[in-house]
Length: 68
Image (cartoon, rainbow, N blue to C red; front, side, top):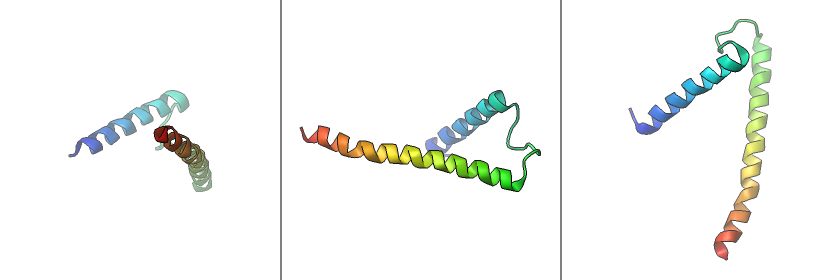
């Protein structure tokens, strides 16, 4: 197994532990409908888009700093 995969697996385990601490359950929970799972996914992807846009906005600033 690659080092990258090992790191990713470790991060997944840490993330699940954080979810257990925060929500008291894992994704094995049975109280959400398929639609609710889809809504959660959409909300997570919306957050990811915000992070992506922030980083895109940072790139020109970093390039300007490197040109100086």
